[in-house]
Image (cartoon, rainbow, N blue to C red; front, side, top):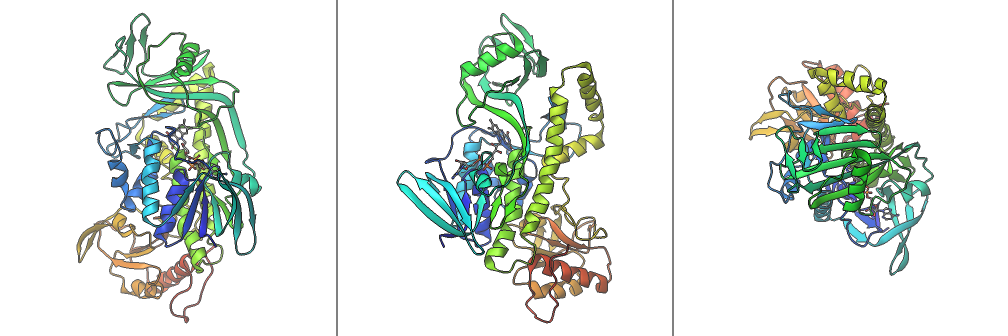
Length: 523
Ligand SMILES: Cc1cc2nc3c(=O)[nH]c(=O)nc-3n(C[C@H](O)[C@H](O)[C@H](O)COP(=O)(O)OP(=O)(O)OC[C@H]3O[C@@H](n4cnc5c(N)ncnc54)[C@H](O)[C@@H]3O)c2cc1C
C-alpha cells in the first residue's frame, strides 16, 4: 500500500484535503500531472464559510500573511457581483460574509506548506490515466516523464478539476449546462489618459465617461470595478462557442478586442496584474462516491457565478476528511462515509440554485429581464433578504440532513463561534477545533452528559465552559464544525442521555465500555 488515501490533483481542493487528513493521522499521497504548481491567476481570493473554518483550524493568519500587498487582512465585501448587478452589504452592521483577497497561486502555496507540515507527500509530473478497485483497495495507473507505474491505496479522491479523469474513469455522470458564453476578467493599472472619479466612474480622454458597475450592450456585458484607486477591475461577457483552455493565458490584445466588441470603444489599458478567462458551465456530479473512489471540488461541481467555487470545494474536503479517516482507522460507523455525498451534494444543489438564478438575472436583455433586475434590487434594499442572499453566497445557510425532525434546531448547522469562560480563562469554540477532533461542549455544567461522553473520550474531547445566552445545554460538535447533536436548555437526563448515546455511536463509533449498546448512524 503506497498510502492510506491517494489524492489525484494538487489544486486547492487536493491540498486542503491532504492537510485535513494529516490532522486525522492519515497517510496521503498527492499526485498532479503538472510538473510545477500552476501560476494561472484563477481565483482572486477566498470568501464565505471557508474563512471561518480556517479560523477554527487556527491557520487563517497563514493565508493573511501570504499576501504581498499591505491591506487589511479581511475585507468586508461592500458590493459583491450577483447576477450582473452588485449586492450592497454596507447597510448591515454585521455583514453575512467576509473576503480574503489572495491570488490562487499564493493560496495554493500556503495550502501545500500546510499539507507538507502534516506529512503529506506531493509528487508532481504524475498523471493518473487508469483506475481499478476491489473490496479493500484502489489502484491508479500513473504516467510520468520517467515512465509508468501503479499506486495502491485504501481510498482515492479525485480532486482533479472540472475535466476530472477520475470522475470519467469511475463512470460518474456530470450533468448540467454549458452556456455559449466566455467571461474575461482583468485587473490593470489606471493609464494616464483615464481619470477615476469619486463615484467609481472613469473619464477616458477622447472617449468620455464609462460607468462603474455593469453595462449591457448588444455585444454582451461590460463591468468596471476597482479594488484599489490605482487599479481598474475589468470584466466582459460575450456569447461565444469557442472552447478555451482555462490554463492558457489571456493576452491584453484579447481583452482589448473583447472590450471593443462589447462597449464599442478602445479603452486604454495600463499594466495588467491579472488576466483570466473562463467558459461558463453549471454541473453537479450525480454521485460523490463510487465505492473507494470519491470526488471533491471542481471534479464534483461547477457553478456559473464567480466567488463560490473555492469555498464549496474546500468545505467538501473538511466534510470528507474525518469520515475518510474513520474508515481508514477502522472505526467508521455504518453509513458514515455515505453522509459525505448526502451532505455535500445537498450543499452543491443549494449553490447551483443561486448561481443558476444569477444566470437568469444576468443574461436577459429584454424589458422583462430589466424588470426582474429592478425588482431584485428593490428587495435587496431590505435587511432580511440581503442577509439571506449573503448567507446563500457564503454557504452558511446550509443545514445538513438531520436524523430526526424534532432534533434541536442547531443540529446539522455550523457551530457558532461562542465566547467561552473556562477555569483556564477565556476561550472560544474556534479554539477547540484547531485539532479537528470531535468535541462535547458542556455549557451548563451537565455532569450527567459528560459522564456519558466519557465512554467515547478516546475519540471525543470533553470541555465544560460558560457562555452568555447559551443556545443549548450541550453541543456535540463534529470535526468539520457542524453540530451532530444538542441538548435543549434543562433537557431531562433520561431523554438527553438516549439521544446523546445515539449521536455519539452514530457519528463516532463504538464506545470504550462494551456495556453500552452500539447503534448505527442515525438515519
Ligand atoms: C478565470 C478563473 C477565475 C476564477 N475565479 C474564482 C473566484 O474568484 N473565486 C472562486 O472561488 N473560484 C474561482 N475560480 C474557480 C477556481 O479556480 C476553482 O474552483 C478551483 O481551482 C478548483 O480547485 P480544484 O483543486 O478542485 O481543481 P483545480 O484547481 O482544477 O486543480 C486540479 C488539479 O488536478 C490536476 N490534474 C488534473 N487531472 C489530473 C490527472 N489525471 N492526474 C493527476 N493530476 C491531475 C491538475 O493539474 C490540477 O493541478 C476561477 C476559475 C477560473 C478559471
